[in-house]
Length: 282
Image (cartoon, rainbow, N blue to C red; front, side, top):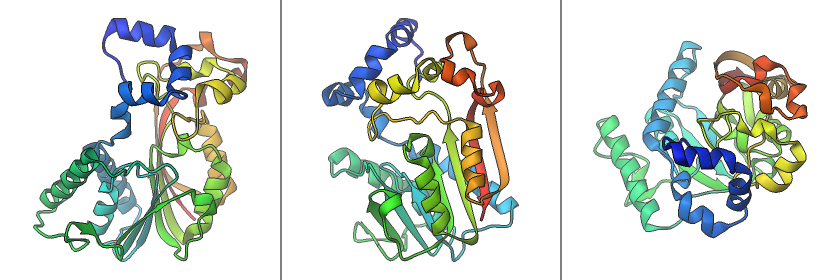
């Protein structure tokens, strides 16, 4: 999250150990103060989809007739709708910690996304949406871990947005994704390498050791961030024979004063990278 208020920012940055510790262990505190974190911004997701689409088209890939997989959709179907409206054959969504809960707020959000897509593509009726429900012939949501789900399909395209930085078993996950990808298929990931605690301090989490971070300040399914860096992800992708077609990185200034010794061993250039968008081919 991003803080503009100076007082809150001071409190946030100087007591971050305490706040992180309470947040990942106290459901009431999390629900009261951080409820907005659990609702996606479908307009932002849509913009990111169009950016991704532009990069895939430049590399002679389009979605027509393709079977697509998205991991970690959160509480949003917007990417699935976009794939289908770009003539994809079918979309599978998989999330280990799904947030598509049955609530009034989620239903309202669901309707807003449908209305948004209708307006975007100037369509009164959507072929994958009938009688207030999604047609599973075109869209299927699976709750579970990609590393232990048996899927019959193989995929022409695999996509994720701000997901891989939250995965604990990253090697196993990339292995599973690589196996599910068709030969010559494409994979696109947008990875946010910042500390999600406060985007005004994108590398604040560098000050903690691995033991403290894993044991006290993060929790899988709640606040987990693996803190892997650009070089780490690139090595994982290359290990699984994924050829890089396109990549875009962003950097931010790094204050090296509070680096834990474990991060001092890493290259400064890699530590300064705050985001990575990458298109790969098997």
